[in-house]
Length: 307
Image (cartoon, rainbow, N blue to C red; front, side):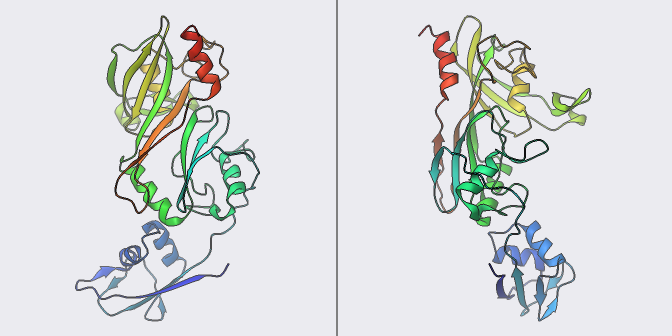
């Protein structure tokens, strides 16, 4: 695959930064990506290499940018079955099973969602970065449900911006031990690293963590459990799990933040990314996507219902 070369003429009335101008000309790329190409010498202004990202264009300059193809990240494509719920030229929406890590990391270099996605569509390699191609948000290893994968740079930028500005509506189903203090509610409890265990997160003081906000409502009550619908407004690591524990009703099966011995016969925590409402690239109205509960969670619910 050869380099892509684009040439533009700046015809603005007011002076403008080079990186800002190129980001407007190439909306499929983030400003950070454009700045990186400028710094690496891939941009020329009037035939000369641009030396700074903040070079001011005054009017009439010819700007040429050379965009190299994505570099292979050394990730292994694997033929792992994917439950693809929706696909178009811009993205995939996948129902991730519990037990699957989203992207390779120490101790998880095979069998991840990224390995499976590259086996499904090799062209996604390098999209949005070499380490996590196509990934715009994450789910915990043992959380099942909906996750979105970008298939090109334009879609990656579009989706990343929607998640960043909190325009994506995420709905989770969580079965908890006990019940929350009120049937519906809002939790505002900052999250940071656990000072006693760096592998875990914790509810911390505001100055030591990041803002974390969730809303919930009760869907179904049982003698010793409650099925909740959760809407996280921020996307902190382990947010819903921590907020449930903070309410005094940890997620059933969550041996990290809840009871060490699960109250039901589950080998995972009962948390499922149920619904996603987002606007697809090039569209104006949001769409709603839904992933059904996996069989092991349905069996747990049926047992509580006496079925």
